[in-house]
Length: 285
Length: 307
Image (cartoon, rainbow over all chains, first blue to last red; front, side, top):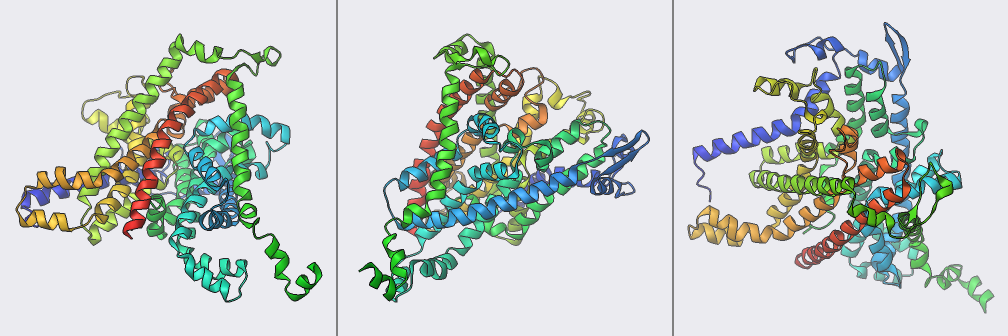
C-alpha cells in the first residue's frame, strides 16, 4: 500500500493544491479587497500589488463615510454589536436551559421525553420559514416584533435543539454508576449534577456551545424576517449594505471581513471541539 | 410529620419534587416545542385559507384550493424543479468532491491535518456572507472571476445575473460552503475504519481499486448516507445563499421553495400560497428527516457499542 509512485505523488500534490486554492482563494481575495480603494479594485487587470489602505475599516468603525457627495452614515458597527449580543445571550440562555434538560433526557426515561426530543430534532430539519412567517404575526400581537427579547427567544429554536442533542449524547456516554455512588454518599441531586456530571460532559458542552454560537452568528433568515432595522445582525446588515447607494466595494469587503472574523477565529481556536460537534456524535469512537 | 421531616433535613422538601424533577428540567425544551408547534399549526391553517395581507377582509377558508391550484401553476412546477435540481446537483457534486478530498487527506500527517483545518473555514462563514463574497468576485465590472472567465474566452460571462448561469453560480457557492462539511464527516469515518482488512488486502497484493470499491466504500457507506441525507435536507430548503445572491432572480430562475414562499409572503403578500408551499416543503423534509434520524441513531448506537 505504501508503494506510491512519483507520478501518483505528483497528482496528489496537484489535486491538493487545487483544493486549497479553490477553498482559500475567496477568503484571501476579499481580505485583500478590504484594504483597497475603489480605484485599485476597479483596475483591469486585477492586481495583488497595491498600497493598502485602512480607510474602509476607518469608515466602518467611525460610522461615517466621507465622499465627494457628502457624508454618509454607516450603521455597520451596530450590526456587529447586535450579532455579538444576540449570539452570546442566545447561547448563554440555551446552555442554562438546555444542559439540565439534556441531563434529564439522558438520565430519566420519563413519559413524553422521547416525543419532546424527537419533535425538536425533526424541526431542526424543517424549513425555518414555515415557523417564521406565522411568527411575524404572533410577534406583532405579542409586541415582540421590535425587541431583542423576541429575537433571543426565537434563536432558541436554533441553539436549544443543538445543545440538547449533542450534550445528551455526552451525558449518555457517562456511566451513571459514578453518579449513584456519589448520591449514596449523601450528596444531593444538584451537587451530583454539578460536581460529577457537568465536569465529565464538559468537552461536549463546550462543543455544543461553540457550535450553537456559530449557528446563531451565521443565521440569516430568522433576523431577516423578524428583526427591525436597528436590531439586525451582520448577516442581514451586510446584505442591506450592498444595495445602499454610495457604499464602496472596499467597504463591503471589509464589512465581510469583520463579520466572519469571530467565527473563523473560534473555528481555528477550537477546531477539535468543532469537528466533534459537527459530526453530532455520529462518528464518535 | 412534614414538620419533623423539614427539621431533620431541609433537602427533603426538595425530595418530594424529585419525581417531578425531569419534567421541571425539560420544561424549557417543552416550551420551545410548543413555541415551534403553535406557529407550525398556524401555518397549516393558513395554507387552507384564501389569505392575502393586502385583502384581509377576503380572508376565508378555501380548503384545498391553494394546493389544487399548484397543479396548474407553472410557477409552482418551476419552484419544484429548481429546488430538486439545486439539491440534486449540489449534493452529488459535494459528495464526490468531499469523498475525494477526504481520501486525499486520509493519512494523518501535519500537512494533511493543517489542510483539513483550513478547509473548515468556508463552513464557518455565514452562507449569506459567503454569497456576498462570491457576489463581489463575480461582479461584471471588477470581479476577479469575471476577469478570469474573460481570459479563457468567456467574455461578458454574467454569472448570477444571467438566467443561463445563475444556477451554476449559486451551486458553486453552495459547493464552496458545504463540501467541507461532507469532507469532515467522511474523513472522520475513514480514519475510524478498522485497519485489519486493509492490511490483509495489502499483504495479499489486492489491487487498490478493488480495495476501494469492495472494502473502503462499503465500510464507509453509513457515513456517506448520513452526510448525504443531512446535506439533502439542508440543500432542498436553501435560502440564504440564493436570496443573498440573486433574491430568486433573474426573473424566476432561482425561486426555490423557501425563496418563493418568502417572496409570496412579503412581496405579493399571498400568505395562503406561501404557507401551502412551506407545508409541501415540510412534508418532503419530514420524510427525508425520518430516514435520516433513523439512520443516524443506528450509526450512533453502533459507534457507542464499539467504543
